[in-house]
Image (tube, rainbow, N blue to C red):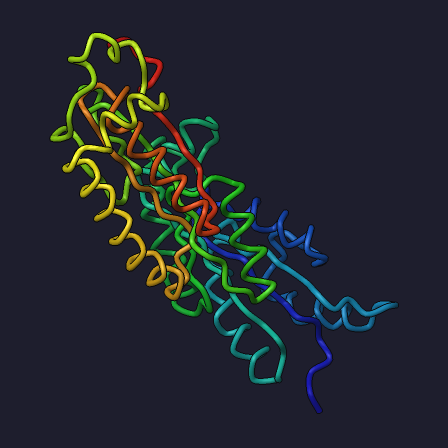
Length: 289
């Protein structure tokens, strides 16, 4: 006889990787959520959920390193539940060390494995502790570069079973202020005609039609934009098929006012016409020339 226990999602991962956001999203999707239930009580808890009136059909449980050595028993518990025919899956959240360190510094919280203040050491210690759990995951989710809204959307799409088209974040920037560290793809537009040297255009920006025409309607600008569009037309569907949720693409010029802004605005218009979810950030537009 098939196990009558509910559809169960276990959420585990590194501290600071987004477990709270994921659990909130699952709760909004109708899951009964339990945080940090001791692993040895999972079976009894699911039996109680199945016997509730009415039975709980969806349950989510957060399991993390706060359980210490007990968390090592989670793989064994998963095997037992799966062998009994239960509808069980494990989501494991991770992120890069630098991203996790930035998050802890912003929130000023204490990492559970870094009581001595050595944050990087605490992160790696926790990663080692959870390695066996990560190996059992049905899906590994790297939350580096994802904000809470993007992670929430990813979970909604995962549970609903639909294939979400990759969303694109476009950033314009000025090289004189440094390159954006979050960019996965980066293009240098400094070879294009520069409106800064045109007196009538200097105080305008790439958002102004006359600047966009100056930058993009010459032979070089037109070919550059067309080649970018063709390249993205090939690349983005490959990411869709892979399940990649978001892509951050940056375009730079000298000051981040004219050429990069015009290129990003043109790409955003094209991608939106294709039905893509697009966000635009002109990082250095408000900085002085």
